[in-house]
Length: 279
Ligand SMILES: NC(=O)c1ccc[n+]([C@@H]2O[C@H](COP(=O)([O-])OP(=O)(O)OC[C@H]3O[C@@H](n4cnc5c(N)ncnc54)[C@H](OP(=O)(O)O)[C@@H]3O)[C@@H](O)[C@H]2O)c1
Image (cartoon, rainbow, N blue to C red; front, side, top):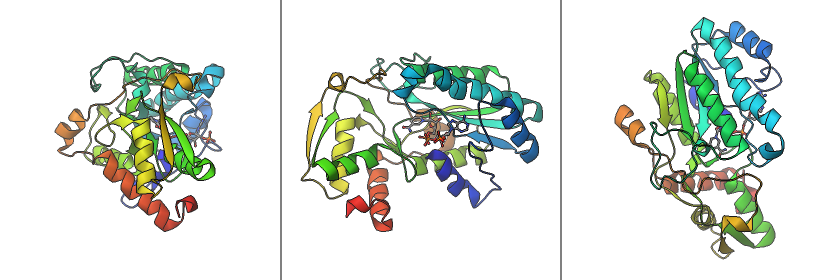
């Protein structure tokens, strides 16, 4: 999802080579090294990950192979060639109990397997000693791949009623906006850790209601439920909102509010007929 939007946003102004798992398998050092040595990029952006949060609880080995060992392979391949590594991480590295937005100085406190694997990937990147930009983001949706917006619209159409969790809070973020922010950080040579999400926060329930409203589906009944009702394998942070203050201060920019991004996304998808379900 994010990788495709990065290709679109960076491609116009930069020479970008996109690689998929067939010729760039993060879990194989030889595969990563060969691609890096052939392309000799200034920057390598790792938008790949094992992202099945619940699946990770059953498949810890695979999850760590991609999200932790994969980062080690990237760091090992990029270090000798002085390639800057841009790596994407997650609000899930925090346990969500702080009660206020997490800053870049807060220490990770991951809860589940996916969260621990992402925290380990971060640790490997930071301790690797090379040039890096580490972006933590959250609640991504976008044009490509499965995501919450698509799921809500599909379910609303198929079932006409929804039950959505109202006790977990985060910041819905359009991968297109995130890709633009990463482009800006790179073009201005920023390095280190940055928290980047669309501005503001809400519960999954609020998010679902806004999706339906922007899609003109206000008639669909949405029930607010506690997360305990879903009995998901992986624990989730209850309030993993990321502070955008450092991004604002360093770049002089603010990310737009999540509602504005979502409204544009839903309108665009409907216009392009990508989500036929919207009409
Ligand atoms: N989605 C969110 O809500 C969210 C929130 C916070 C942070 N993030 C982070 O943001 C980044 C991008 O997420 P996304 O939602 O865009 O992910 P995504 O759509 O799931 O894309 C991840 C891609 O990585 C690929 N991949 C898996 N294993 C690989 C391997 N061994 N070598 C190379 N590629 C591999 C996957 O290929 P297959 O499809 O073939 O498996 C998939 O195309 C990830 O680091 C994720 O942890 C995501």
